[in-house]
Image 1: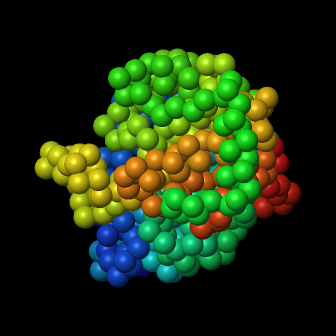
Image 2 (image 1 turned 30 degrees about the vertical axis):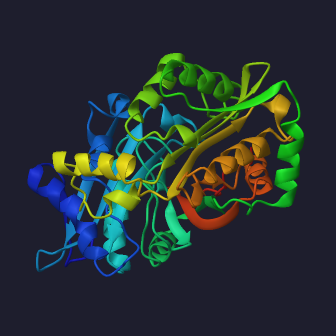
Image 3 (image 1 turned 30 degrees about the horizontal axis):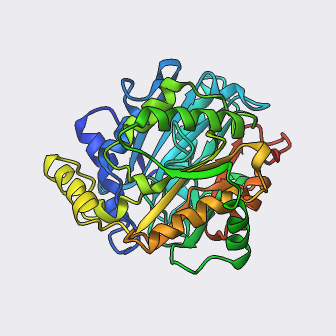
Length: 391
């Protein structure tokens, strides 16, 4: 560690606050940065909220200079099940923020590496989340626009800090964008949708908030056919699907959840949510009672969210390439003429290891808007590095 830097473990309310507050100083002149809600980050490190801590561990540090000012932060973590997914036991580091100084970054990366080595781990991915991949994951490298809810944003120099330390690109994460304006779709999409909608056995529906159990059941059925075949993706239970929709209950807009059916059997879904960052950008990370009420008022009454986030998209194999995906898009587009106030859609990122899904999103009009990078660092520097395997 550099002689002017002092590493401090985050262990109490004061250091937790410093850990959470530091980025606000670092990005104070960047109009695109939006502070995440403090409670969304703290859930990651709370054993009662994050089940990965039952068979794993996490640690956080802040880095201070000789004048006692914070210049960086980082977290390191591992889970006994996750570390075994790769050829070498692999942990992670995340929630990395740092001034543009390679020595400061090295101090943080070294601390993470040494801590993970104590648990017989041989590599670390970063910057990643200690939990679901769809949130707090990746280092932004292209498309420095406002981040969507729970997705990371960082300074451009971060890529150099990771790569100069020795991290290599494990995979690229592509975020696709599509304007939600009636008549803006590619004619080929409209034509395919028109054809599939002639089929009397095919129908499309939005989420019925009066029957959430049906939505959960439909989601589970399609997910287990469309996604659970991929390596590393486990089938979900009805209880898990129900818990997912229960957790989103307050922010769900029924018009952002679309299902396709064949003879009343669910065959596809497109799950979107409003981008809450358009509301919480002025909360300063604080989700107190007043801000919770403001969120619901702005979301449900004022309807200020004009950006939707595509969380997950799936079509069972039997109906892929047959116009069902296009049918769902046009079904939603029809509603834009009836007062739906969304003008933009950002799809949750898709890894470059998943060319089939990339092709599908391009077919429904998506264009790449942002690119994040998941890096990997092998502790044994003589070992050959391999990128993520193509699915």
